[in-house]
Length: 343
Ligand code: NAD
Ligand code: ZN
Ligand code: ZN
Image (tube, rainbow, N blue to C red):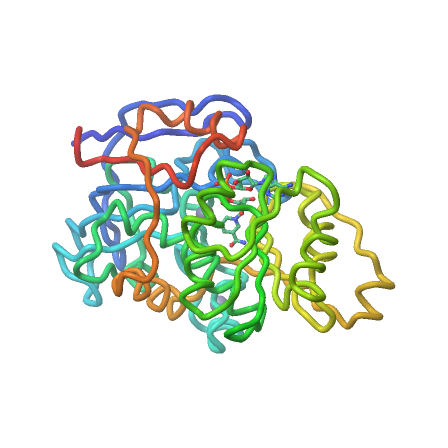
């Protein structure tokens, strides 16, 4: 059987193991994708550490920002064809029939499968996918630039919509990394005034270059107080992408009266909610999980039209353990993308 290189999590919290394995086959209703590029999301790090209550079964291959070319079709597949460029996202598949799937909330389907978590993902030369749930990459968008959009892009685009903030209003984006650097661009393209919040001055300087109207380093002083003073009462919408519990308390405190604080960062643990402030100020706190296939098409369209562009650093698959260490230290400027085309 033909072989490929893939990275495996064999033990939680241990370095990934790079090894050869059989190229998987596309079964009935599936497709085989030859990976060109795959972004490295902080979620991959949570997955490899076993951070969350529901853990993947070991061993598994992470990666849910894979873009590649369809090279084989399983029996009965007609929605994509060989040669198409597709993305294999976190929402790998869903049942298609439950109340959530029927109402365009397939992201919370109880039978959903997750790429690089419950199904082997894109830290590999080939990946099997469900053709009904792949992202369709618009012409004119290269695979490396598209990779971060199919998780970091869609998640922040959807999260911004979920804040309900309207053009001309303020949004605070906490965490200006992989997700956040795209969130800033989507928010500006959607007509919002943007305050970027991070604990790293380099990321904040980049946020300004990307169009942020205001930046706050959350390491110093009282970031919510600063934001409230500078915006005349706080942000209408807050999007928390930071993988840090401290950021969640700060984000709720940054929310304007009657505003909405959307949580997308997923550090393990819980955070206390100041009940009186939330109730008396009529604040909404809302979780948001990636996005639907419709959100995916919309998020990709912004990039195809040149309104949003991922900042990428290319690395080979063999660098994955070093990339994880850097992500953990907050040492990745925007997004690392594994490049499978140069090997
Ligand atoms: P990243 O490491 O690229 O970026 C995180 C950023 O947060 C960094 O810039 C870091 O400096 C900053 N940060 C750290 N502590 C902070 C603090 N206290 N205040 C403000 N900023 C702080 O990570 P990423 O790939 O952008 O992912 C971020 C989080 O989002 C992860 O927890 C990931 O699992 C989660 N995520 C959730 C979804 C979803 O659907 N809800 C999707 C993708 C990722
Ligand atoms: Zn992700
Ligand atoms: Zn369903």
